[in-house]
Image (cartoon, rainbow over all chains, first blue to last red; front, side, top):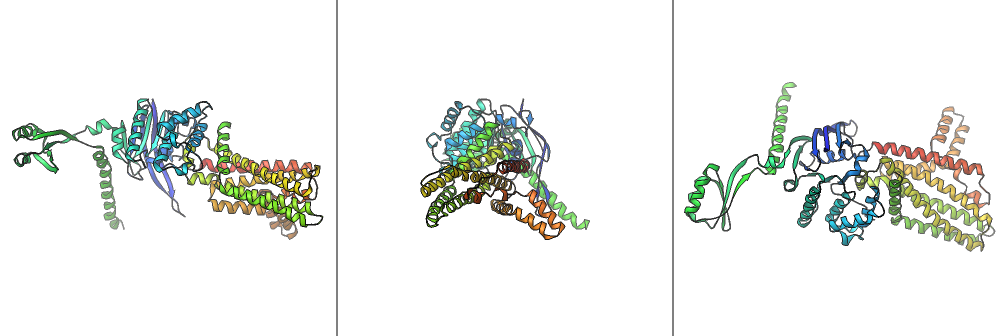
Length: 327
Length: 258
């Protein structure tokens, strides 16, 4: 069963004061997210991530294409019963306390008088805000607001959770807690669709990612596949190797970096590995680690986005050189 | 649906009663009603008339200020703060949001008008040392004041959906002022001798909210009861106008993107 599906989803905004012209922010985006997946929508600022989320939540209407949530049209409000949403940089009501705000959110989902306080208390506890529940939200820090945003997104025990930049504004401890929370939600079979431009978060959490740039889908796939596509090289780390050992290993390496007592060497070719290990033993160097250097999500991201930037700049260069001829 | 509208209405009420401006206005209104006692005591023979006129006018003016200043922020504040994203991503239909917001502010105004009415009757009791049957007449005027608030909140809500708070306040206030003189404007059209001008004034008379028929403060002060026909027609007019305003606000809001 598909939790989220978009087909040729397109969105144009009309910009300009007098003569309004359409500006395309989303261009024929087709995505499928299975139930129970953690799906990351990646892209630089202005790529169309938030617009995609807003269309799926019925906050913005598509110019063309379809968006479906749990096999219902995204505009069908009944689909929202099973959806939780954390907006980017959330802002809530200053005059309410955390408990009042959560109770308000619970009431909008029609939680019974009996279930409401239990669910509110449990979630505030889960995000570490139980002690601040009676504090007005105007006194909350950015991190606390972010946690509250996550708590309210879970108030209805949703099947699909949309998180727009969930780690934004959190300190390292908060980030770790939210990461663990997302992993727990995944274990409970929830579908999580989140947008981020922090690639390490996506790398830790996602089953699949899609890369969006200038409103277009640049790549989509399982993180496992993307990251195991190729072993670039092999990296070994030695502790306190002698000068002779480093000199002997030099011809096999593409880079040697010394940090304190340790030396990190990147091998030129995987086929040299046995010879390199023989040299390490011969020179009695202490081997700390040996790792294959695989493609990182950042490499993949830069390859997709960077490729397009290059082709775009090439295209614009072509237009610039061709335009005098057409005149 | 009813439960969600009730939730939004109650939340709006809570938000409104925590606004500092509201308390300032209530205090001002009560002070003005209190000062009416002073005027009444130095106005020989017309003390009651003075008190009823000043007291009811204070309720109307301060209530109107509350209706406009809180009403214009009902929707625009939610959009500016982006709290609307949070609400509309939940199973809340857009019309439920608008109706809930409207009812929430009306509840606030009802409570505030009740407080000010309490203050007014305390002042009346202080001046007259008793309250009789004729003292129920100002309640008719207060009912008409509430009908005006219902239309003003509808106007403010509609403008709040399409414009900035400052412009919304300006438009609502202008329409309120024009609406109070619609009878005179129509008369002016009839007397002008210009057919086009007359038609324009007739059109304005029927299209714009007509507040002139709701002005019964002076009647109440003179101890004249409002005819039942006017009570019924005023109520039906306000209901119809509010329905049109809220429907228009819903139509605009349904098409908005956030």
